[in-house]
Image (cartoon, rainbow, N blue to C red; front, side, top):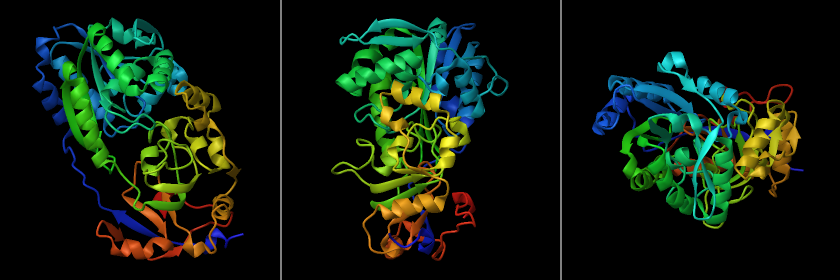
Length: 425
């Protein structure tokens, strides 16, 4: 057995990322939508369904409210529709509760919110896959797609997470999400988008999109209104920017990664596989993929995930309290709908952080704890500061993009053997 985890010393680094930022989010939404001259397409009194998804997007409540304000200025009658596939437990009530937890309430945004799981089938792809579309959105005169563009947790290609996925998977509700993920496995997400997107754009009166890209500090980096006929080419260009601006771990090789919290507001799989190097395999980085993380240990869930612990099965160890916080039904539903059932599997779990870290350390073949390369983070969305074991100290001191902001000190276990939250260290 290796030395006990309390013998390990850690220090904190601050990372330096390229981080463009939108200073006035509401004003930028109005400026961008004005560029499209939507009054030429939207007549006074017409209804416009605005999508709201399940991701924890920075400033999403302000963005949605500003869209609503702009549409009202045109004389339109906006309404917000939930667009999140099977999330929120796959129920209208759960989905409404989820967006309200982000501040997207009827009182704040100034228009009705419609959450429902009913869909219409607008057609089928060449492969025979049914294309579902939210019934409430379909009944509106127009639909405006609002969504964040970023690397997907599993899909890799020209299209990942963004306007296209919101339009096809989010507005497909549970049944549509199931069909989309099945099609993506069979023929690839890019091919599915090429086959299905034109059908939705043609039949569902998509008037425009509002694309959001965030920087590595979980801040709004770019807001851009996109005409519906430009969805495909522009989303591909925005995905390149999103990959460039996303957060990263400070080192390429990690023995143990300790994560305070996972949740749907952090990533579609609870923690972002693009950040931890597990996009193509749940438990290891494939050839050419970095970082290479040997063991992941999870401590808990975010409040905003409402018990959805999908991604749990991609870790090697977890705290027992995480399981106590888990809504098993919601987790299983989300994982199976996404055809990623392994993401809901329960790893070995431990009552205390000390027990969990001891198990993780013992599973790594190193002679001393001083050689252990361990990182401790709040979550994969907030990586501006990272706690590092002393095995990284020499390299960190040579890096211009890293600032060492504390001296090495012992892991701060309390008497029962638990650590404080990352933010309190």
